Length: 243
Image (cartoon, rainbow, N blue to C red):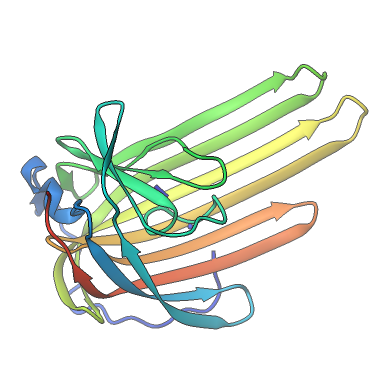
């Protein structure tokens, strides 16, 4: 947790390969998303708003942990003006149980549902559902509402990538597919519809965490359609596996 865009930099896959063989065991969980206060990742962030690419530096730093429902959460130290940014990296906080790494988004509306971004053991072909909801109901005002939300993550294999921080030789490739649809038939006979689709590819390396993320998003409502693309590549990092 936790994705739309036009132009994109070309990347060189040094030893990209998808294999059914490699497995990241449960005990490897801390290595693929290190959680400790002060852990810092610097990314080259390239985004495209449908017109041109812009690249800037984006730094992610984890703040001090707090306990919620018996789980230790580590928030990112950043400003959260919106709630639709891809997870991880923006406006989020993270936690880990024995075999799962969670993210939940933080924004003007405080907490969103926790998403399992990594579910160990990791192996090619594994997948898990984040959300699957298809609901129709009538609200107190007599308006008929149809809401669809679906999000699923997939392990696509183990690949090696060259990023500014160096060659990451054994990255687990995680794909995230999310879509939403909202339609309301108002009591007065008018209606409104909106939809969104988000696709993210993420690469997690042992002892480094998230080293690359590509996010493509599309949003549509009566005001028009919007496409957006983001690309993050790890430039430097300083992490501890835990406190």
